[in-house]
Image (cartoon, rainbow, N blue to C red; front, side, top):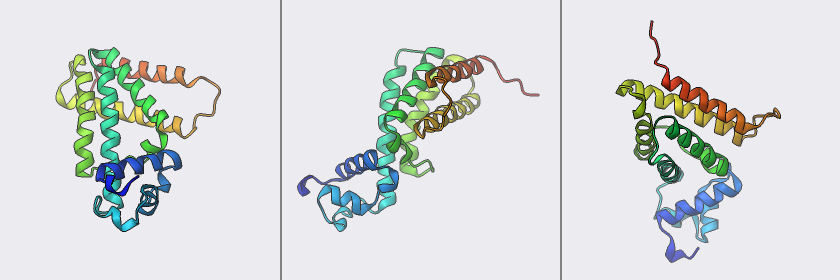
Length: 187
């Protein structure tokens, strides 16, 4: 990468390619600088430190994920929207396992703002189930946990049985949409 082309966005792109190829553990400012063809101190003009770079990467990852999921659920509602959302989330993680593992999960403000777009898409997909705001937030958390958990386990090759993962994921989607259609009875 030519030095003149270096910007915060370019640094994030280099860092994402590094993580895609070598894993999240390989992410250092020195490694990013080396790939960008600059000295490490040159990066400080574009990112304050490694924590900010991770946050900027997370924003990009969430934006990419939201873009894909938003397109997948567009024009769909209820079970069809949830199926599209869950399928697209899993596809992204399986396609980009190292990138997804680099995602900052802590509520860093910049990342939280980007994550809100994903939450808004999930809440919109859940509207057809007639939930109040609190119920929709609980359902969004459960939905995220189900998608994230399955996809991360798959990306880490944690499922060792011979049964087909697509069939297992179809069952998970069925369980989720059945649960969404069945009101929770609080006693």
